Length: 608
Ligand code: AGP
Image (cartoon, rainbow, N blue to C red; front, side):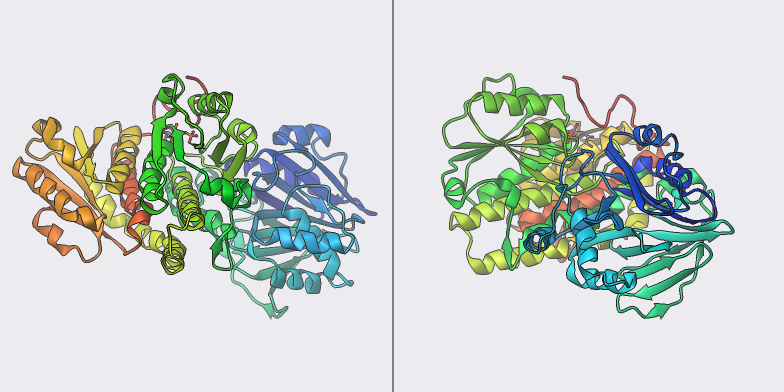
């Protein structure tokens, strides 16, 4: 996510901002900038690259004198990393400066309206729309202008705003993206997260959705979106700075698991418009979608597992043949790519060498490639013919969770879009599926609340030697990811198996007490998987089952059952994977493993 820091007080603002942004570097970013009121005007310095570039450009802030300022580290979502796209952003006469963390879902229609009213843009960002929109509503009263903007924009935002005509104030605004404010004897502060201001104060105010804060050097006022003044109670932060970077979570992986409801929302909602799916970045006409004869999905690791899921979903609802391959195999198999084959590569980092090579191989053979990527401006994002971003924000833990969940959403949207355009999905079924998609964030939230129960169960398996994950259809794809999550962070051997395949050899490995995790979310395959559970149980296995609420028959064959709420069977992966992520996490924690940085692994495998 982006990082925001602001300061107003008796000291120079720039050094305070730079130091605060440095504390937010863990959030991942690709550019940085500051806006400081120098007594006459708002000065902005910003640049792509690391914070060090900004420090050098401003001589550690010395070239930007002034006691009021806002700063930003940008994690690109709309517009590649560049000086122009870096924040802060000005209005046209440079009397307003804005920094933003979040995604403005309706920025394009707003931008078109502003352009029609003579506004000129210098960047590709959704944030610049905010700067001009505030300008559009500003008639001398900053609070009035800001609240009008809040009524117009849709999406998520944490904002820091300064006005040249009100140099004794900073404004902070929040909707969905986190923002805090704090105060000490030398001034007032805004920040995206606690670490940025922990040095100055442990007493912070967490801004709630649709609240606005007016900060002056020696006091703060809080308002609702209707400009009513409210009072808020501060929270005293007990964390140390290391814990604070993880938002109080013990590991980034746990923090990112808990961000999944938001990353699912952020990837889903901007692409739902008036009851339809709109994927502007797909770059394909309806005719081109209708002419697809086959889809080839290529990726590595967890991204490959989302591709396996997508095969079942796309073939199931759009009836387009799908082949899925690991990139390291695809690139050397001299793949047969017939005319009409669409290639999709999936990558969180956008830098995985094998996946990038697969993209280039496909293009060399004359096939367009769609990239589903999380890191804006990454190699795969730049080289793909079209890019559909997963807006999961930076993922720090090596074991992917929130990016994986966002990739699933992107693939469901593609499958449903293709199915509808090709006349394979009736409007009523389509709308029901949209409703099921919109329910996923709250259902994920509910499953995450079971963490204590999962932790208790996981503690029984810290000494396990072999764990098997089995399932049929989409449940097999879920099993693949559940198995990888466990083994890559706990170092316990684990395998995922198509449940029907067990009897062809692997079942000989089942011994007394062997843990078998059976995933049974696909009702039409439930009885078959139930039989497989009975088979392994008869040979001594301890069976953990993950199934849909109401499938209580499973308790006849399972020793421990985790129920997931009802959703469309094609979306079951998004829910069933949550307890399996938590299981792998807590087994690894129980073993004392380095959960965020497992041995031998890198977050992005940029070599073959
Ligand atoms: C998953 O937890 C692993 N970190 C790994 O399998 C990862 O999914 C794989 O290396 C692909 O990375 P990418 O999505 O960045 O291309």
